[in-house]
Structures are given as C-alpha cells and as structure tokens.
Length: 564
Image (cartoon, rainbow, N blue to C red; front, side, top):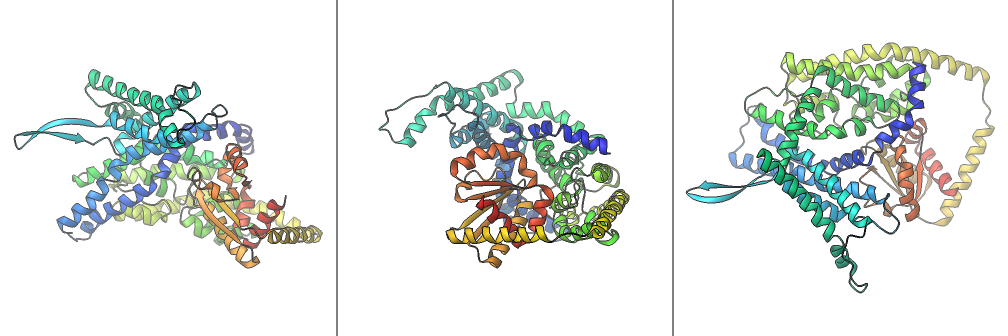
C-alpha cells in the first residue's frame, strides 16, 4: 500500500492539472450557481407528490400551482446552466487573455443562453380549435438539454475569445459611455456565436430532422447507459474516492462531465414512476450522495462511530468525537484530513472499496429487490438515511438498504482502522515516554500575543471569506473564526462559500482562506487577490481541521498571518 500511495503522490501534479481544467471547473460552477433552482423546485415537487403516498389528496388547484413552479424553474434549468457555465468559463478565460483584453462574462452568459434556445427549442405550428397556432416546444430547455447547454457555453466563450483577442470589434470614440461602448464592442462576437449555434441546429434539423439538443442526447445516452451498470457505477464511485484520497475533490473531476446524466436521469425516474412504472436508473445525483457516498466520499458515515467506540488511540477517539456530527451531514473533511484518511496507506483499501461495494449493493436493491431509484434531488447535506428515504419516495426498502450498507461499511473499515489505531498507540506511548518541552509552546504564545496586539492597534475590521468545494467544510472554519474573535475582542466578520461562487463578492473581504480541498486553486486565484489587495491563505489538511476545533487558535493563526 505504501508503494501505491507513493505512486499517487508522484503523479499528483497530473491529477491536479485535470481537476483545474477550466472546462470542468466551468461545468461545476455552472451547476453550483443553479443549485437554488434545483433544491427549491424539488421542494415543490415533493409537496405535490409525497402527500399521495400517505393517502392525502391535494386539491387540483394546489397541485397545478406546485407543478407550475417546478415547470418554470427546473424546466428551464438547461438555459440557466448554459448562461452560468459560460460566465464561469469567461472569467477563467480572462486569466489567459493578453494584457489589456478581457471577455465580458455577462455578455457571454446572455449569448450562451440565446444560443441554447436556438439549439434546443422548436417552434411548431399546430391546429387548435381549427386555428393554426404557434407552439413553443420546450422539452429540451431543462435537464434534457444540458449537453446542448455546454456546447452553447463553450462555443460562445471561445468565439468571444477569438474576436476580442484579434480586435474584431467596433471601436467608438472615448467620449462614449463605457456601458454603451462595451455593447458595441461585443456585437461581432455575439453575432458570430449566435450564427454558429443557428447553423449547427439548422444542419441537425435539415439532415436528421431533430433539434441539435435531441441529437446530442441521442448520441451520448448510450455512453450514460453503459455507465448505469454494476461495473460502471462501481468505477465512478471508486474514481471519486481515488481523487479524494489524493486530496483532490473527486466529485469535481468525475461527476462534472456526467452532471447532465445525473440530473436528467432523476427527472426520467420521476416520469416513469408517475406513469406507474418502476424508476430503475441508478446513475443519479442522489444515488452518489446517499448510497455510493454515504457520509461523504469513501462512505465514511460509519468511520467516526468506529473511532469513538472501538479505537484506543487518543488522536482517533478525539477525531471521532470532532467529526461525527459533520460526517452525519455529509461533511467528511474533518475525518479525511484530521484522522487522516487522505494519503494514509492504512486507509487506501477501505476508502476505495466501501463506495464501490455500496454502489453495487444499492443497484442490486433497485434492480432485484425493487426499491425505487432516486426520483428527486435532495440537499446533499441531509443525513444519508433521511436523504435516501425521501429521494426514493418514502420507500421503506431504502431504510433496509441503509442498515445493510452501514454493516458492510463497518466490516470493510474496522480491520484497517484497528491496524492504524495500533500504530498510533505505539507512537503516542513513545511520545509520552520521551516527554516534551514547554519552550516552544511558550514562544508560540508570545508570538501570538504580539501579533494580536498589532492587529488590534490598527482598529481595522478583518473580513474573512473561507472557500471550499461545496460550502460545507468552509462553514466550520468561518464559525470558529467568529467564535474566537468574540472571545478575544477582535472586530472580525467571516463568511463561507464554495469556490466558483466567490467572483462577485470577493472584493468585499481582505482575507480569503482556501480549505484543503480547494488548495489546488491557489495559483489561479493569487493573481485576483493580489490585484484586489486581499491576503490569500491556505492550509494543510490536519492543520485546517485543528483550527476548526480551536476557535481561539484559529484567530491566532489569522492574526499571525496578517502580521507577516
């Protein structure tokens, strides 16, 4: 196992490069920006469907109201994803543009949304009551149109890049207001992008008599179907865990390219269920959240319980107590970086094996036992058993599945945790026998006190933004900083967020902290923070987790970094 870990560390730069690919990042950020749509619309979908499971019949007017909200939010998600993906990609592309030239993210967003319309919408004429009426066919404006949304976003941004880089634009006198000049500057880029989408869709309709969105879905769907198999699901969950084991946010790398299938299949499952059939597609977002990733990447739901109840090492018992609540709610970075699991040879096998086995068992329950596949999109931070129960339409078999998975995960993790516990116990005994000096601790306290006085003397508010991949881990440190600041009398405000959602608000802060799983973005972000005069900080795994559990220590760390 040591040889495997050394091999992964040797090639970590390559995996980091993959995870920072601007197109993958744009897809991730595009979906992240639209999560309020997904979660809000799913709430109304639940309200319209779940009451029937318990024998409650809602008035038709109420059902129509709920379904309308769902249709005009989730039903337009493809259009929205096209815009937010283009905006994110444009901001990433700007870091690679020649000096003095940049893309307008808002213009790219609007253009990509228009292009998505052209690639997905059909304007048919039908006879209603003997009168020919134009009907706007919107079937591919939602989740079915995701792939077309990506085509529109990527095509738009690259055409804008070419036009702006080569000055294919209309230049107005300097006296013209900036907003008006910007609009004229983007005319050619906008026009070429729209024409490109229109030509692509025209070719698809002329040659194959289908909208481009339909064509792309038809061509790609066999690949997604191949993934929705026992080996395919196991491979996906194992790949996510492998990247996470190296300290890279696995879902950002593995799940981003298949987001179209994850959300589209969820809608398909619901449609099948409402038609009286058995929803059977496992390849969905909630399957990865609550079954293949029970408790987070690597299926760590059971790990804190093992650490608390069966381990003897002080470090592992303490980490189990500190991580059990976050892990229950799907935030497993405390155990990933605090135990640690990341790059720990003892944990390599169970961390990869548990999600792969969970995926196979979960799919077996769907295919053979008859459990409903996920039909809704629940917040990923729901505890696994609750999320699985809700997303399967209150299917009691999902609770049986959860019990089976927890037993299986315990069997997988326990022997490896026990071996690691034995090693830590030996190390702790050796340290106790050797004894420690208080000199370093006293010096550290003195340095922290000096830095604290220096910060207080400036009488300047410290505004901290903590970023991680999904706004879960970042909340832990943001909360610790607020608590520590209150205890030490420091004027500090802190907020948490997900990397990719920070672009519009980062100028409101003077300190930004990247959580361990977002460290890979440090170099890309440094240019922006230097330009804005923001202090950019990052941490290693266990250091970050220690700070989240030590509010006053977290404040000492911040003020010492500011004093440098």
